[in-house]
Image (cartoon, rainbow, N blue to C red; front, side, top):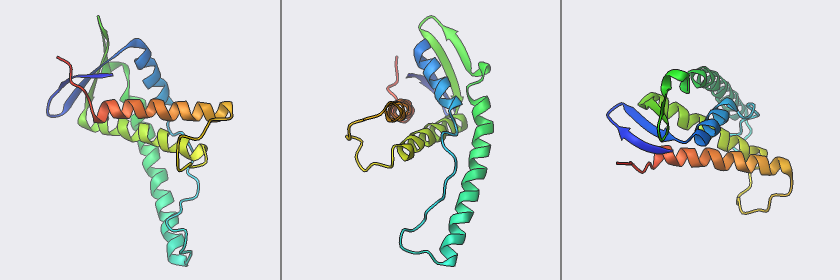
Length: 153
């Protein structure tokens, strides 16, 4: 995924067919995980903390519902143009931000599914963990392409 052109509010990226397929399949995985319990503090468990945790969980649920609606439109056919060197994806700044949020949600969901390891250098021992690790890595590659693009001439 390469940044081809960027203006004030538009970002154009070139992707190979393989990158296009991977990105589309990643976005379809959103939301990656359900909203489990939210923990604000490991120490405090008073009524106010529990109430704040419920409010945060409700807010995250609403945010994910809104992002799911946007995800359906995000990589629609009108966003793509087929070119001689691959597919061209045009995103507004807002769409780019939504894509970053979706990819980050997938990365965090995979990390949760892996047991929230402090280090990712731990050997993978199951096919399921291998799948989570690969999804997390793929989402990270696309995030980095969006955050630190190498503009092409």
